[in-house]
Image (cartoon, rainbow, N blue to C red; front, top):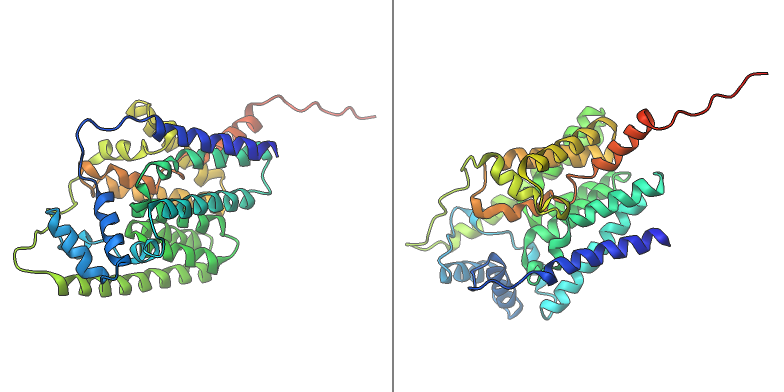
Length: 331
């Protein structure tokens, strides 16, 4: 019961952060506003693709290439709910479900270590409590990835949840690729093959999505300037600060903590930690090349995972540097 009280306190702390944030002096155009508008139009009966393209044109958003248009999965799901309040409740319910699944997957760990892992994951999920972030694809996709990692003992469920995460947000592909790589590393050919098949299926579905987008393009539609910007470490640091623990830290310390955590996950972690580390490292490496300065919110995808190695690192340090066990005297 004590561990669950601590978890609730951590969640309340995350809730207090957005509540304490002041409103901007001047209204800004946010992606959340666009996605909320599309959800409302789809709920009213419009087809996803015409509604999305029209909403993006109204805001002078680019509609080509197809990567400029999010997949319809999240919109169709949110359109089932009548308003933002019920949609937010569904997101928070999924968040609690993911945390419970994560805690249960750590049932064989010492309680302090397990609770520390959950608390660090919570620190990367605080964005879910901000108003209208329910309309960010990253908030849903990252919870599906967490559920996928927690289900590592059941390969079909693990890969199925990861595939669903990719259908919500394409950047989740980094963690599906991590399942493939970890499977090859462990010579788990079945898991690696299943994950590779999921990637192929996701690619095929994305091509279908691209065809639907192309069918809606009109002369004069804006084209995205692209995402290959080689933003390097500054964009990575900005993305990593989506974890509440890293928010106020200087950039070099952020990178040092994350590097130490990921290294510990790879060296001493189990399948869940290693898969999370490989996916997060791949995602962060991609951010050094892809992404514009205003894409820092993509960091919500990796924020819950990048510090999960710190409890592992602390455990190994204690085993090596802690008090020596007294030796029993022989008779």
